Length: 315
Image (tube, rainbow, N blue to C red; front, side, top):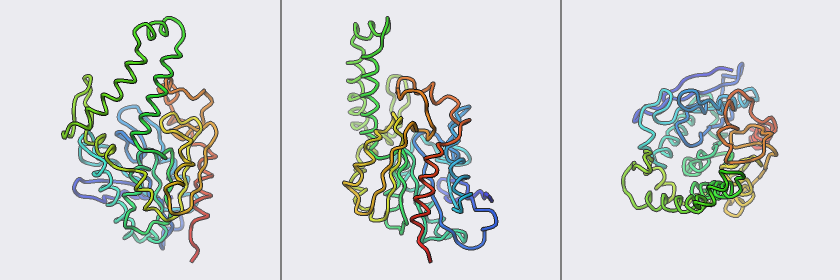
């Protein structure tokens, strides 16, 4: 495949990679815009330092081999893109995604009538607003079927449950000092603190928090934005996703005007990898360690490619 680096925004300067099928660079083709998940992830889905997930470069390579043009980009403050991610809110990220759509619709290799938006994790929460007012051929929500607030509640419930179930001396200490109960209260206290401030950032328990990002996500009605979608939708996630409730993919049909294909892939986790270990949020760091060295779930890739191919309109 051919890969081109493109600057698609000036304020701030944002950069991404356009991949074009080898031997098919002439003429417009169906295109997939890939929106990344939360955190300081670059166009490949990798964080700072040694944190490697290689999510979006692997996904782009697979889809391009199947004949699709793809575009993925560095978020603000990551890779070659300028800006400070800590001060970036929900609507800033929507703005950036819209600039990507504008660029793609003008590019000679992109069929503007066959533009799909694929959002992974937070990318799915941004997708409806990024595609609003545009002619989008279809949306793909990957590991993303509920609001950020509901995802956090899902994670917190698992953490509290995990603390209660800890065995041995650690478990006894947790129950003695009621750490599980304190953990539940801390989550609610954090939410109130974020919603009460008008600052872009705040310090919470010694950690710098992107308050603007949390607050704008909390204020945005993700489910209402789904009602504006009238094109085909694929919602796919893994049964071992502990960061966003897998069962919610089937509930998206309650909000959408268009058709929904919902799929849960056995043994796949939030990082789109097959996972043999039991789904346990308390062991997340261990499970994700070295994830970038593993291929994306074969079943996931096949589901995405098959759905895209089925929804490409013939001329």
